[in-house]
Image 1 (cartoon, rainbow, N blue to C red):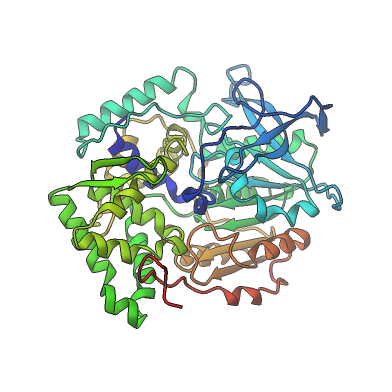
Image 2: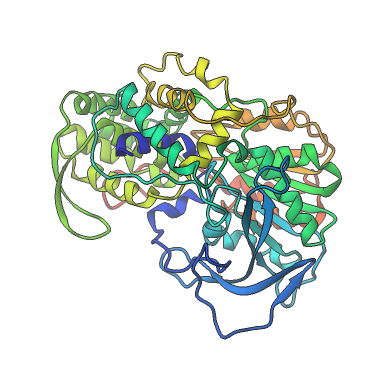
Length: 515
C-alpha cells in the first residue's frame, strides 16, 4: 500500500493514539507480551503459573518505552468465537496482560481495564507509555489489558505496505489497494466481526473468565466509545468509567476532524500571537502555515536533512501532506506543538530541513502502530454517515478534504458488520463517570465532553487548561484518577490542583521560550 494512502488513513485513526506524547521518544520494542505463538516475550526463570479466576497466567515482560526495560506482568490468552452466532466456527485468541496490585497494596476484586484508542492500537504494547499514571491505581486494584480483536496479539489485521513515495492516488489506485488488503486479510478473518460491539462482548467474556463481578474502565479517545458501549450493555458489571478525550456515542467519525484541527490550531497559535515577543518575531503562524502549504503543493522541494533517528544525511522531497500530518500530530500535545511557529517560520524563509527531519521521525514512529484493517472494520460499519459528510467543503483547512474522501472511497469496498439500532444513542447511566478533556484538543474538543456529561447524573467533566489529547498524565491528574477509582465519586474530587496547568509558551528560538 502506498505511503500516501497509509499516511492519510493513519491521520484519521490517530484520534486514539494513546499516550501520543511518547511518539517522540518511543523505540521499537525488543520485547512483547508472552502469550504463545502470536507474540515474543523475554521471560525470567520459569515460575509457577498464577490463577485469576478461570485463567492461568505466566510471567511475561511488556514492551518498555523510550528504550527502558520492559515491565513485568502476567500474560495469557482467552479463546473466543470470531462470530458468536457460530460458536463452532473460527476462534480468536485474545491477548491479555495482568499487572497485579502492588505487593503492599490493598487489593480489591474489581480491576481496572485499560481500553486503548485508534481504533487499531494494542493495549498491551502501549501500556508502558501510561504505566506511571497507574501507579496509584495499582495500590488498590489489578490492571487488566486486553488487545481488542484485530489488534496487537489478537489476530492483528494489518496490511503490508510499501514505503515508496506516491503522488495523490486516484480512485482506481485506492480501490486496488483496498481490495488487495481485503483479499489478504479475509484469508484469516471475517472482517465483519471486528467492530466495537464484538469487542464489548469480548471484554465481558474476559471479565467473567477472571471472576470479577464488576470492573472499572479507563478508555482514551476511540477507547471511550468502547467504554461507553460496555457501560450501556453491561451496567450491572460496570463499577465506574473514565472517559479521556471522549468520542460521544452520538458522533459519526467523519471529516469533522479537519475543522476541529483548525479550531485547535487557532487556540494553540493564539498562545504565540498573544505574546508580544512571539508575535513580533513570527506574526501570524496560522497564516504563515497556509503560505508554506501552498508553496509545497505547487512545488515540493528537495530537502537535505539529517535523519533524527539514524543520524544519516539524506535528501528527499517535502510534501504538503507530510507537513499537514506533522502539524496535526504535534497538535495532540501542545507542549510539543510549541515549536511549530518557529519551524513554520523557518520553512517560510526557505529553510525546510527542520520540518523534514520532524516529518521523517513522525513517519518512522507511527509506522505499524495501528492495525489498519481493524480500523476500517470499525469505522466503515459504525460510521456509515461519513460518506455523506465527507463531501463537505474543508477547503482552506490544514487537512482539507483528502481524509474524508479517501475514507469514504475505502468504505465502499470494505465488508461491513452489523451494529445495534441504539448504537449511536447517548449513554444514559447512573454509573459513576469521570470525563476528561483538553482545552486545546485537536480531535475531541471540550464540547464533546460537555455533551456526554449531560446524560451522566453521577458524572463530572474536567477540562484541563492548555492541554491537548489524552490528558490523564497531566499535572495532578494521575492522583485524581487514583482517587476516583478508589471512591467511584467524581463530584467529591478536589480538582483545584488542576488550576496550576497553563498553556506552554511558543519557542522563540532553538533555546526555547522566553522566561
